[in-house]
Image 1 (spheres, rainbow, N blue to C red):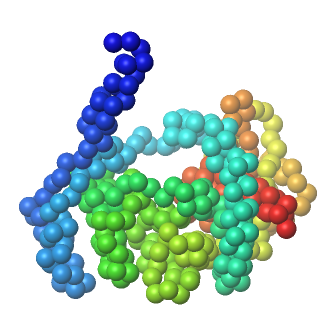
Image 2 (image 1 turned 60 degrees about the horizontal axis):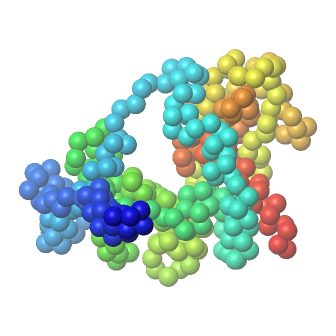
Image 3 (image 1 turned 180 degrees about the vertical axis):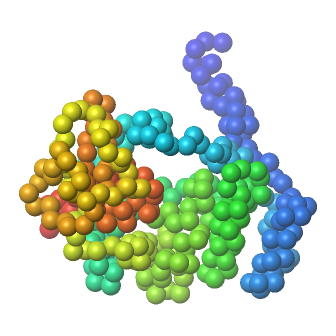
Length: 345
């Protein structure tokens, strides 16, 4: 068999076989599980679900075994060096993260999104006080403006995580309940909704517990659908508003320090400092006016550490995803989107 024929054979025969073996999931009847039986009975009793429909759902679950690996205990973080190693293992350096999430194309796409949905973004700003570029940046990072909302079947994923042994069974059982309640309220088919490996859905990747708390029907069509741009925009704005966003204060500013690697103070969301405490650290900009305590945010670059002050608004972004890298990416992408948007008007 010559080289070309070998390539054709691999594509037509071996690759499909390998693909089905790698990605196939076992269909499992969870109604035989006593814990699931209790779960079903509680939904029927407390929330008026139809038992027959739930039994049918749980009798044919495609177990998502590959998602379980994400939910086992990790090493305790005690020092800045521990945090540096964990960040590097999860995200790479800040250089890597920056390239992945704050590129020019994502910013330009964000500007086009802002232009297309100007009406909804201004409505959200007037109602919730959240600037359009920050709403847009969240949607851009979470789903590339709706292009990538996740390929995992959410019902199967949450059922797997709720009832197969892992470090967060209790949490995912609650999320599964909220997911089913969301589908009931909005008359969605639970089997048709796709999302992340954790069960987050839509353009803004909300977990089910946030759907009832902060997701909104922003286009007034009677349903909360986070794959709809208007609902996604309104829901992000409402999330920020409820979390304490203040449009009058800054988000972050870069600061200077001596040396290339920063170890003098603990960094991250857990720690806040009066600026007078931070001897030897000064904002690079003279226009940073914020009198309250700040977080120190360290971005681990390949050759040095970049250091920033983060305000209350920076913390609010961080409640969306507990990563200082994530919050900084949203902040910097928002700034770039706003700059690109000005070129369009």
